[in-house]
Length: 152
Image (cartoon, rainbow, N blue to C red; front, side, top):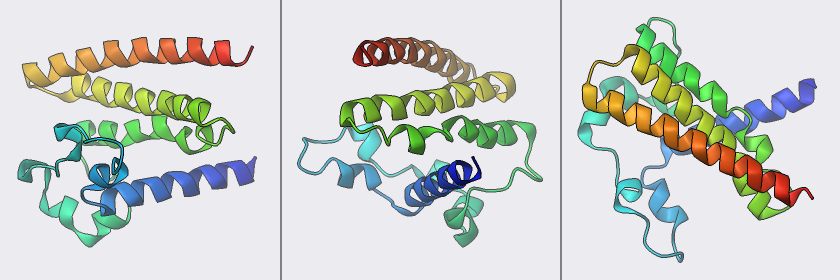
């Protein structure tokens, strides 16, 4: 059990570090597979980048929740919903691995959206959070149904 927890921690840490240190990552991963959607291939706008986000420490590890307001703590803690992603993607069949990895990914999106609903103020962002929850819950149900059919 300890080894499985260690492997999960390593996989998650590696994924987070890769995402935090690879600007334009989405562009590179779609090479040869058609154009990536504009929203996912663009670098983050300047408003998304703070001094803390650009610091060397932020690129090495996600920020510690200590000293943050409750909303940011909730957003950071929502990442825990994705802890199973690395292990889920180890299924032998690539299609199953993809779908299995997407389930914790969607759970993380739901947790982030719930953090917005609990702590956010902007009506548009809160409406988006509601839409994210509805869509992600529906997709999780569809993925679980598909996985059940694959197991037969």
